[in-house]
Amino acid sequence: MYFMMGMPFASALAMPPRTAAIHAGSLPYPIHPYDTLDDLLKIVDQTDPDIVLLFSGYLYAANHLLNPTDVGSLMCSLRDRSLPVVTSDPSLGMLRNTSNQQVFAWREQFGWLEPWLAHLPHLYLAPDGMVGTGSSLSFFNPHLVLPEPARNSVLTAAAGQPWAQTSRPRWLFILQTEDDRIQATLHDDWPGTLAARLNDATSLEKQAVLIAPRPTAEQVLPRLQNPEHVTILGPCRYPLFMQCLHDAEVTFYWNRYSASILSRILNGQPTFSFDLGHLGRSMPAIVDIAERHFYAECNWPLLSDRVPLALASIAEMLSTMPTSLFHPVIDRLSHQPTPDRVIHDLLAQWKVAS
Picture 1 (cartoon, rainbow, N blue to C red):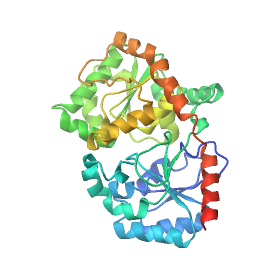
Picture 2 (cartoon, helix red, strand yellow):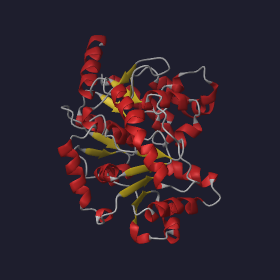
Picture 3 (cartoon, rainbow, N blue to C red):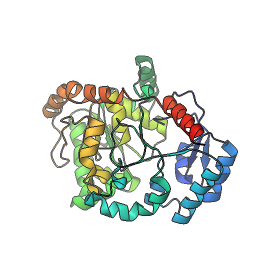
Picture 4 (spheres, rainbow, N blue to C red):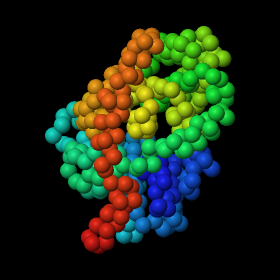
């Protein structure tokens, strides 16, 4: 969505069935569910694209979407159709940096993808200079920065949601499935810790909104001190998630490298993280690269979810965020080419190479 939104090119989305079911009818693009390689190839033939972008080719391994044979067949089939292919890369180039021993385990898991993906252009929502070999492409979509009318439209839509039927400012807590699993191993009583932070928010006269996996959310519910001031949501459609995201006074993550954090920062909206998250914990070597490229090496504090949230300390950190985080990140990213420019250049290069 960050790559497509507001751009003049037509787009179609191929999604695994569960993701397609969540977002069906909610996006301004046609959605095509796929479960097998044959499904994917039928979608390619049906949509007749000029270019195929994998978001992300590496996740075929992590999410068990296609086996090695099917990935190879897919790439060969796209090549036979003379289609240029691009992939995003959640490892920020680390998997292509064979000299780094810290990513050995990741390369064992993803190594079978290397023959098929290493030569592809790699696309990043980050400045140029990613590590590794091959072509690295950066982009910045100016539509990520909401002008005042668009932001008002988002807030007006959010005002109709149940969690917004209160004068209390909203504090949004976002817990991804992968990070939920990690935190459950780190805490003796993870639902208790999570409930305590939600209780902090309600005691500070905020409306706490939690987006979390349902099993964890169900364990949190009995521990809430003011359940009438807590809204708990499961997996969200993209528009609803963005309403929650931009309506919130403050957001809290258990992941420092979630793409939606950048949307908050680019709109000058305060956000905090309690943990490095599944990417930072499973590949420690990525932390320095991510801090440099996503956050311009800014001094962005990492909170502890074991410490109660205090209004005074939060307010102090908020006061420095515009100059210490927002402005440097916006300046760093805004110099990158727009997605339509990236597509134009890729197609031109493909035509020359062909």
